[in-house]
Length: 139
Ligand code: HEM
Image 1: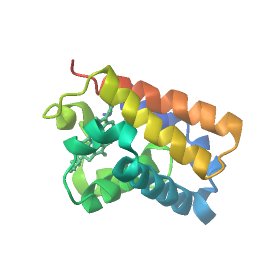
Image 2: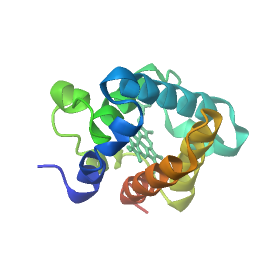
Image 3: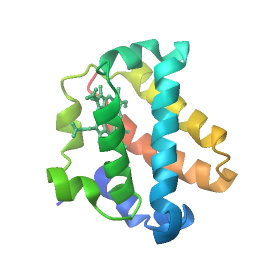
């Protein structure tokens, strides 16, 4: 069983539908994740967040893409490959405080803006992701 926060996204399976469902939902999430990490990799405002990650972001990109596809209600790619996400536990090695959480959300919101996400969708997606990001906080 997924915990409440990890489940929140999958219950909103409309997100995957709103992002294009089977036709283009996967592609939308791929673009969102690529843009998110491009921002993390280049925006000086999030240098501390970038520094927590490996030099090569390839695996982080792939894992977040797989996770978010399932979390939004699409195919459970992450779970099929890696099993239960135990996200909070996987984030324990990193010192995640309010600032790290806010830097993560900053990249995500900036990515949604860059991709021209519709306001209401952006707001709802951001609210749900904030719940997960805050749950990752360990200090
Ligand atoms: C709150 C701020 C967050 C910070 C500082 C953070 C940081 C990190 C770091 C440093 C990694 C390791 C990446 C690497 O290998 O270089 C990681 C992995 C990952 N993060 Fe986050 N993260 C945050 C929030 C989130 C959120 C909100 C989600 C999901 C919506 C998420 C999903 C993931 C996933 C799926 C992985 C890969 C886990 C694995 O299988 O190893 N993270 N995160």
